[in-house]
Amino acid sequence: MNNVQPGILASVPKLARYLVFSLKPDSEHLSVLQSLCGMIDGENVVLGFGHSCILQLGGNITGLRTFAPYAGKGFDVPSTPAALWCWLRSGDRGELVHKTRAIQRTVSPAFRLESVIDAFQYGPSLDLTGYEDGTENPTGEKAAEVAIVQGQGKGLDGSSFVAVQQWVHDLQHFESMTGEEQDQTIGRRKNGNEEIDDAPLSAHVKRTAQESFDPEAFILRRSMPWADETREGLVFVAFGQSFDAFEALLNRMIGAEDGIPDALFRFTHPISGSYFWCPPVHDGQLDLTALGL
Image (cartoon, rainbow, N blue to C red; front, top):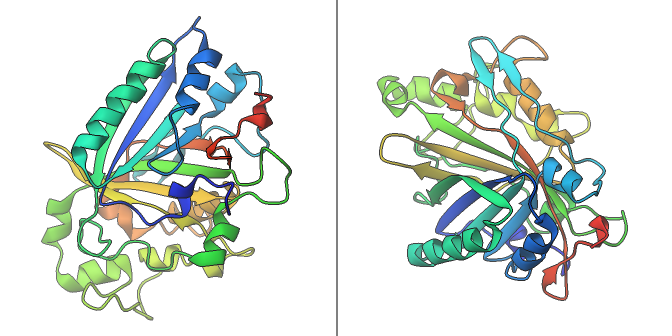
């Protein structure tokens, strides 16, 4: 699919950096965004627009909305809307630093940098708990079918919707569990990644079995571990042709269907939640015709 930002369907990089920007009031956003789009290739940097940014430009993307807050038994799933999201992909941290500086310099007249998260691959696509992440991720044509808008016309076809959350792990608490407790929490064996058939209904694998929904709730995960000086966790990134599948999964995780929350909440919790629309590309450049640009 040559109209997709190629980084969306590509494998996760060795290193990544996520930039989140808010709008500055009374600024000239259009010219700044045009300059930004001229330096985004969709491969080394994937760009997403938040709802507020689309509205500021006078546009409307059907299906784009603001992430809603959720609550479960003893935990909250917050909403942290933002205007712009940049996913920088590389194998060289120096490149990430210089690309960050270039992007920030370009957008600073109209956008304020609110968050920078550095992420990395851990082993063979492991979460910091040591469990494989994204085991049931769709691949090939199925990945494109799940993640990419198709059949909606020029300017929309090739685009994607992405849900982004930063999760903070309490690894000390997780490591205090026995190996069997850990396996039952995830619903897979850490050794061998085998699914546990008789795992409790609260096990993460049971809560998020994508084929068990009607309609099926498949998403394309591009999550990566992150860490700073004092905390660590997972940047959860889920691409879809809409937000419907992600919201179905999240509703079951919080126990909205049956009162059983996902066992993940025993040791981890999200501190952010945002939705973005990632435009398609045309002739190697971002295609903003859906916004009349």
